[in-house]
Amino acid sequence: MSLERESDHFDALRERTPKSEAYHERAAAVTPLGVESNVRSVDPYPFYLGEAEGSYVYDIDGNRYLDFLQGLGPTILGHGDERVTGAAKDQIDRCAEVAAVPQTVAIEYMEKVVEMTPSIETVRLANSGSEATMHALRVARSYTGKSKIAKPEGGYAGAHDYALQSVYASEDALGPAERPNTVPYGTGIPDEVSETVVAFPFNDREATEEVLREHAEDTAAVILEPVLASCGVLKPRDGYHEFLRDLTEELGIVLIWDEVMTGFRLGPASAQGRFGITPDMTTFAKVAGGGFQLGGFGGREEIMAEIEPPEGEDEEAWHASAFHGGTYNGHPVSCAAGLATLELLQEEPVFETIEAYAEDLFSGLQEVADDVGVDATVEHVGSMGQVFMMDESPETYRDTWQADADLFEDWWFEAAAKGALFGNHDQFERFFTSYSNTDEQIVEALEIAEEAFRAVK
Image (cartoon, rainbow, N blue to C red; front, side):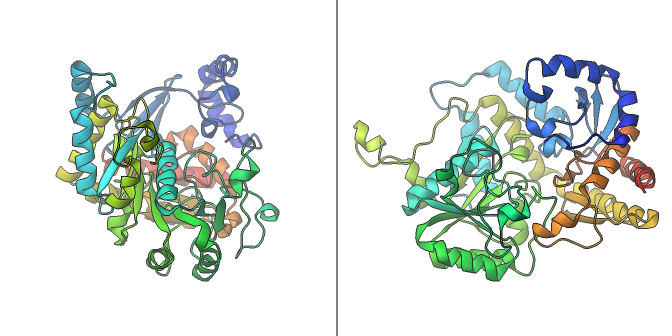
């Protein structure tokens, strides 16, 4: 999203990026905001990427940045890992196009997903996390015969109309914390869609139970990220996931864990393996494709069977099932890259390595912020984390409103100008360590972070 103000702290970055500034005029002439996605927009302009390798990205001005954004999370092994790109290149030589018949590499990839993911008995593929959650919700509605879904306020579950509800909004619009209103994020979303979505407060067990019991008869699914990553990094507290697993099972509501961000990031069995919870359905993307366009959804076999038409081959039989399709589903190049990535996650000490780096990075960020005297709380789970510009650890989405977003933006710009990307400029995003990091890079990152804290102090 675009910043509401242009920070003076952008000036140092502006001096380093004259080619990006000029290129922005060219880009803005052909696409809104001069970017491919609203989240890449920065006032007065973004820097444009030239190259990426390992733990670094390079802009078109030739500046090098130590990159903890890592493509918003997919490149867990680092940019351009030769084993992943090599698998993609080999597949291009064999068959780079989607055919009208299944391709074996997609089946092999899905076998690996089923092997690694506790909740997934059968699986289908898509091209993005948004597609994955859209299809999963449709299948859950079909399975239950109910029309509503429930999601936590402050939670993101994709860019389709049913998911773009109560992601960001004012306190007045959201209403009472215990009984939040459902508020569409942005225009162009019909009121009738918003009426099918119920919002509840993440980490508030009592309020969550009241909301879900009230709407249980009409609610097909609860969909949530196991770690809310759309409002920084918000951890589950006090047995919240265990409580929600028991409650949805009691009420006959399908529990969907949106592991687009956490899937294969928080361990080989994803967040569900880390937390010991088995949802009914799971969505995934990002790390799952190794940096290529790939997403999917899966779950219990009886739920996924909703995709299969009942016996009979007439047209009416196909209309009696939940439709799932897409020309590029299971794209062979993406599946080859994704399969190579998942195999490497199993074969090498990836998680031990990146989580050790993460512990050093995120604990170090807390230390340097404290030393400089900046009010900051650093939260992290595994290899993903965020710096909240506030002096207490947030437990709920509304707690995060106390964070100083302007201060975070200023700090981020100062760090970027010095050569490190701690995610992006949005206080409510997150950043990551990768397998390509080194101890020396973590030390360098902390030195830059400390300089940036001092600059904004």
